[in-house]
Image 1: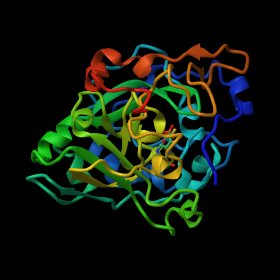
Image 2 (image 1 turned 180 degrees about the horizontal axis):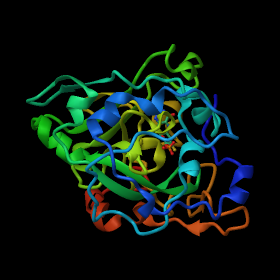
Image 3 (image 1 turned 90 degrees about the horizontal axis):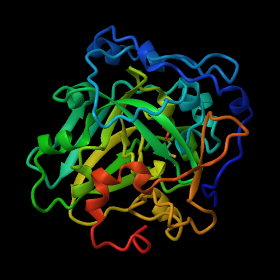
Image 4 (image 1 turned 120 degrees about the horizontal axis):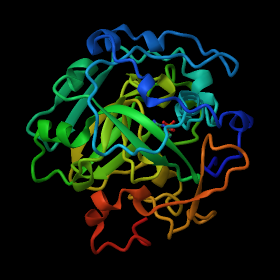
Length: 323
Ligand code: MTE
């Protein structure tokens, strides 16, 4: 079985040090409805490593967030060509090479389980009630690399409030599209498809998590989880489920893909924790993608540096057992 492990440094990192894009370069033109409906970012064929990454349509009306870090963001190229998305292959370059033809429109999302409001919604209707915000978050992968990513998204807490979960809803479960034709990587049983993730209701209603629909002020590229994916900045990257088609309010802890695949290696909580090593490698330090081949690894911070906002969620919980 194929198990996630720290990967080698890719050659392009040697030259990407000066490749940080300036946040002020964001262009905030175009209407979200038009941008999202056009699907412009999704029609292009995969162009391979030599062509510049395909850019998405601009998103309008994107607010700033007090939760953003002021660390420099990784380049658009780093963020869109070094990905995990096993539905499009298991290599880091596979999602950008193979997801170009994926059509993320039309797209519907089903909300079900213990909530007053449930149903199936077109993507555009699903996101319409919520404010779009830029959230520049540090992201830390379980494979001991990290990036800083300027997401655009909607607050998951606001989404949950909108659907009015009942007191029976203790967890929120998410599922990715299950479609071997549109997602050819699903023809290989490297994971038990569809990809699944979950949060406790307390985690999901914390102000930090977002459902991301954009990147660098533009519509989210396919390889990053178009049209909508989860972002939970204090957890390892595998919690950030992409291509979401279902959100369920459930009473029991949901099964999650990497935990089902190797439960001794990937826990349900998956909080970034430099003190609890993965069974096969240390989590004490991380390699910042784009920092260059000779850059020193940097120390990993508890809860990825978001402890002030989230540590209280785990009061009294043994984080070594509940990894
Ligand atoms: N979501 C789906 N549906 N399938 C996947 O294989 N990989 C996860 C997560 N979400 C994955 C997924 C892992 S292991 C990581 S590290 C992050 O996506 C990577 O997100 P990024 O490509 O935006 O960096």
